[in-house]
Amino acid sequence: MSEALLEVNHLKKYFPVKSGLLNRTVGQVKAVDDISISIAPGETFGLVGESGSGKSTVGRTIVRLTDKTDGEIKFKGIDLYSLPEYELRKLRPKMQLIFQDPYSSLNPRIRVGDAIGEAVLNHGLAKPNEVRELVLEVLASCGLSSYHIDRFPHEFSGGQRQRIGIARALVLNPDLIIADEPVSALDVSIQAQIINLFRKLQHTRGLTYLFISHDLSVVEHLCSKIGVMYLGSMVETASRDELFKNPLHPYTKALLSAVPIPIPKLKRERIVLRGDIPSPANPPSGCKFHTRCPFAVEVCKHQVPEFRNVGSEHFVACHLV
Image (cartoon, rainbow, N blue to C red; front, side):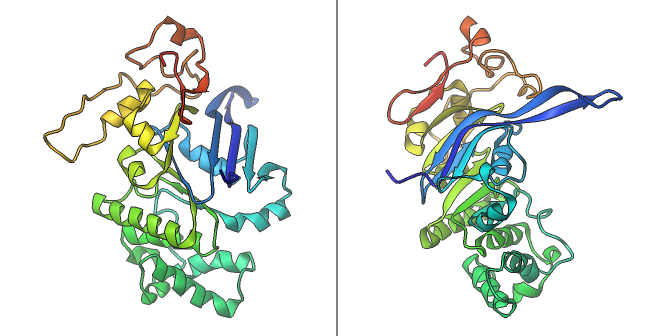
C-alpha cells in the first residue's frame, strides 16, 4: 500500500462561546471532535453527513483556513501545522479547496481570466505573459470556451461558475483537491456533468480528492472510500462497496435508506430519524447519536463507543456492533 498523501490524526476543532460584559469563554462548540482520515494518492475519500456534522470545518482546517484545536495533519508526510508561514505558502498550491457556493466564491467585479490567473501570479508559477495561455488551457479542460476568459461571473450559469471554481483550483496543478459540496447547489442534470468532470480530471491529472457531501447517491458514483460523520465525530468508514453492501451504524443505515432507488419495483425500508441533530455546543453524553437512534440501549447513554475495525478495514463506533 502506498504512503498516504493526506493523513489526519485525532483532529479537533472547537470554537469558543463568548458571553457577558467581559466577553468570557463560557463554552465550546465542538465542530470537529477527534476524527482521523487517511487518503492514498489517486484515491477519492467521501466525507458524508447531515448539515452541522462538521464536514466543511474538516476541509477548512486541513488547508489551514482555520486553525485546529488539537490533532495532527500531514500532507506528503509533512506536518502542516509545524510549518512557518513562508514554508506553508510554498505548499499551498498543491492543496486546493473548491467551495460549495459557485455564486459567492467568485468576485463579481473581476473577469474570469483574472480570477483564475491571479493565484498563478501570486505564487510565481508563471510569467505574466504566460498566464493567459495557461488559463485558456485549464478552461478548455473544464469544458469552457476561450471567449469565456473575458466575461464576468454574472454572465454564467451555476454549472459554469462551478467549472470556473474547478479551473481556479486546477490551474495551480494541485495534488489534493478538497471539494466542499461542489454540486449541492446545482440541478440534478448539471450535477452529473460536474461529477463526470471530476472523474475525467482525476484520470488525466492523477488527482486525489476529499469529496464532502450530504448526498450518498453522489458519493457512490465518485468515491472509493467513505467516512460518515455525525455531530463532529466519525461513526463509520469503509470502502464504497462495503459500506453500501453492509452498513453497520444505525446512522449510516438511515442515510442510505434516503437514497432514491432508480428501479420502481425495488423497495427499501425508509428509516426516519426522530428529532433534529443536537447542538455541537452541548452534545449528548455517551454515544452522540443515542438521542435519535431507534435501537439505543442503556449503555449508549453513558459510554462513548470505541471506533474499531470489524474486518476488511471497516471501522464503526457503535455499542450494538
